[in-house]
Image (cartoon, rainbow, N blue to C red):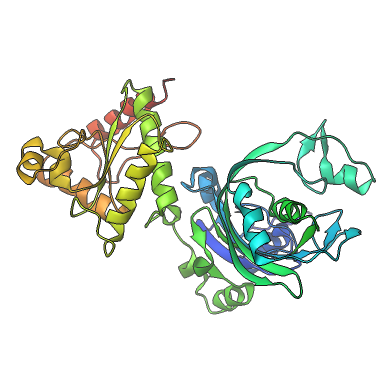
Length: 397
């Protein structure tokens, strides 16, 4: 007679610091034993040689994986110049070597054209599908095929360490989903004319989680033995970004503007809130507000008018803006208010609904389609309004 095994039903998100030489599935399999829970998925595969942030989704929380507001990733990568391999990292077979020296000046110059949106050729040793087959299977059979380049965005590419004697360096990379860091390292080596390969990789951020959110497998095993494991699980809304970075605020504005334009707004007016209207280096929210305004003026944020920093009273009242001498097309006429962080936004929203008796309608933008999101205290009317506004945002602009 076949035995039926019933594992625990757990819900939530947990970040593991993946050890080197483990596959992402190895980590999931280990966690199933530690947590006594079968339904676990991971958010973003890491190569066995890589370490770092690996979010695990327990139970039904796996459905929220693609709804995470931040899909970009961040890594620190070590490169050795003068060697190329068939896998573009130190695990592969050596294809060529070079004794050409590398200078800091040349290396810094090689990084410049690789920042921003670039075309990247996926490596043969990758899981990309071409003509119905995985590239790595073709590579293992000794075959190399033509494959199309893909657009990826390198938001940040900084040199952290450089050793000219040993011709090695460490870089900090913030990039879009689908970027191959191995290929980026290879391309840096090609630009220097000596070749290069990835020797170590650590993911420091993904889906809005960082290494500070991570636990080692040893720590999790101990927590399970001590009956503390469930205390470490984050609720699904713990995956929401509490303190968005400048890049994340830019994405928030782009997603919101896209939704409003779908509703018929021609050029939404966006106010990036702070407690003052002037740039103050000691007040980060004013610095980011000014930076977003500059992005808008340079054409990096399109389809809207961005004003920042702007105080709440100037954003909603033309009279107060005029009294303060604050001139802006957004003064007293903002369609979008961007709060400095989730705490300020939550307080502002509850003040408007509870004190001012405003109606609240909530939905998530930036996913494949608008997603209705209501509060536990939402009335039937507010839920109805949320459905209506989500349907309006789903229209093609």
